[in-house]
Amino acid sequence: MAQLDTVEIMNLIPNRYPILFVDYVEDLVPDESLVATKNVTINEEYFQGHFPGNPVMPGVLIIETMAQAASILILSSPKFAHKTAYMTGIDHAKFKRMVKPGDVMKIKVTFGTLRANMGTVDVATYVDDQLTTSAQLMFVVSDDEQQTN
Image (tube, rainbow, N blue to C red; front, side):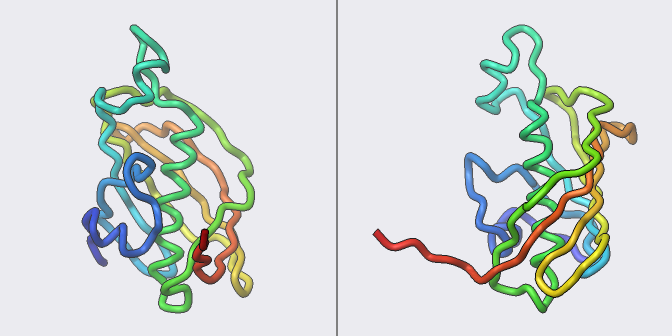
């Protein structure tokens, strides 16, 4: 079981501020499962408009957080080292509870299927051990692509 801090996470996935949402990984079993944490704070810019007087983390950003945690699990595998994981689909997404400032969101990811460089992961988020969101994400892994201008 491994633990990863923010710098180690940034060594695995390309996301950076302001779109890096996973704060740390507390449990990682490569090719099997991961538990990560997102500390939800009122300082996040999206709370200014979503919604004034009733701040709620947008569902699309919860899904993005899930995808980032899944990418960490996928790219921690030696066979996918130095590659990029891309989300290709979302199935069975369910939103059970709102996520608000002050919440500590736990993201639990388990590998589903894997064929060559594509597969599925099952992801769920929790606040205070209560299920907030669940989904199955599809992904493909490819070589890093560097853009030139």
